[in-house]
Image (cartoon, rainbow, N blue to C red; front, side, top):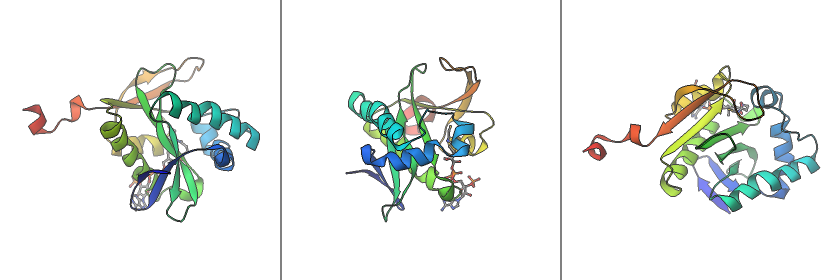
Length: 178
Ligand SMILES: CC(C)(COP(=O)(O)OP(=O)(O)OC[C@H]1O[C@@H](n2cnc3c(N)ncnc32)[C@H](O)[C@@H]1OP(=O)(O)O)[C@@H](O)C(=O)NCCC(=O)NCCS
């Protein structure tokens, strides 16, 4: 079932058949460098990851990481909302296959996910974490209206990450502010 549609893309919930996509995204060298090794090295690992990660999150929350497809059904990446240990707020995440970067697809998908988070889930604050050196990601987060707040470390991770955030309170229209 298609969850979200944009002019060029469809976003759908992941299922176990998406193991090849997960394997390709999570073993991409840029993903490994910018995000880290999620321990997914085979399709079987990827199936387990989908069950323990996105499927569990759809069940527990009303959101999760989604599959992004072109209108012809070609899977091109992942984008969605995640609630993770060590962060109070829900965060937006994305990772696209190399062939589908630099074409505005990540922005188009992430804009739809931000809208879904705000309007359907009712989130008042959406954050993101990125390596400060991950220019493509920080640039995309800025375009989505997130601002750098501080550096943080996640549990069991020594790396300093940049926390970026969007808040409804800071983005009220003049009418909403009265
Ligand atoms: C982070 C990541 C998703 C960004 O993807 P991306 O394709 O660079 O992001 P965008 O969709 O914003 O597209 C970028 C460029 O496409 C260009 N573009 C081409 N056609 C376009 C169109 N029709 N509409 C909009 N932009 C278009 C734009 O110029 C834009 O660059 P600009 O913002 O400097 O002008 C991608 O680099 C990635 O998957 N990296 C590996 C995983 C990762 O690091 N994830 C983030 C972890 S925090």
